[in-house]
Figure 1 (cartoon, helix red, strand yellow):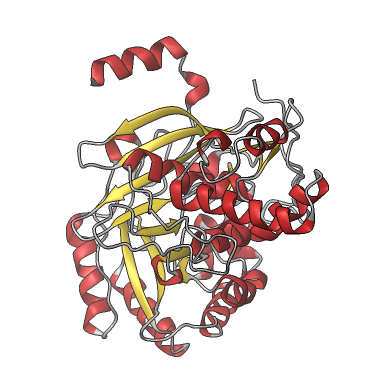
Figure 2 (figure 1 turned 120 degrees about the vertical axis):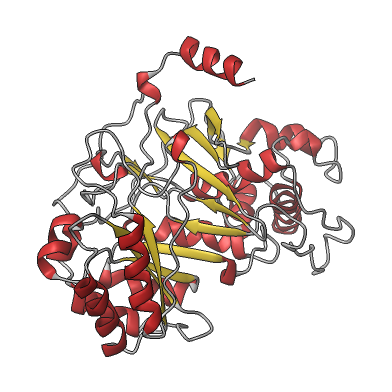
Length: 411
């Protein structure tokens, strides 16, 4: 049973202003996953190593963590045998616990994960012919209550830590069996620990589009993505990472300046009344304010366009007039933009229906006719509730025996 209370929320659409401290481990050990190399160095020094030894050991451990995917200090073979038990007594390399792993008929994979303090969240891997995208969660639950989104019906429990965020990438690498192999020679010098290449690999891209609003957990998301982008960390280019926001305007500039990844915006409507209904955050930060922030987003250009996500809801936001207004707004703010049209993915209790294929096609054509790319996203993972807007943990509804029976049947 989870032992953390629900996170206090000052308002329906306001962020929690202070990140919660990481729940201490019962064994008193410190989890080094998600910590910067500088912080690991500090912790090793505080535990008793001299400054030079702390720096060297931190560099070695950091490399083993992010270039080899090692989870046990005993496996770090270039560290002295007498030092490995010393590390293991004081520190640990964590991973979120895998509660359930599901495979869709279309190749999509979804994992139900559990934090050390007993809370469940999900991540999804979507393979394509030329790329493989990992959809990463930033919070347990969500506070935005977007009407069309199943995740939005959950309560916000807490922010995920940097270790729990980057741990999702680590788990995906574990499952896909593709850890880069950097050189271990000369780690006492300032050599290049190796560089990750996406060529020939399954996991090539990351999208912060899982459970939660990333910009309401900004510090932890930033710190996790810095590890993902670090040339001596997971070394994935920022051009292969996209962060999706529902429009937390005050944090967008900081996102561009401090993280620098691609931006995606959950727009979903072009009029105040409709967006107020389906994306309640619009009541706080309206469409004009949001698009102005997009126009000012650092690094946005025709080479790095902002993606606008638009879920297609029957008779709600899918008319020809809606399409034309979308074009007008994007051109008014001179946005380097592309639009992802997302067929609505149904879930039990949803009050909306998906637009007809003909209507989606016509909407797309109108936007394309005005020189703006508007492809229709092919729904993926619907049969395992892994499609866009469907993520909602349901582990508490299944017993261990039920999950075992399902796994046996699938095998």
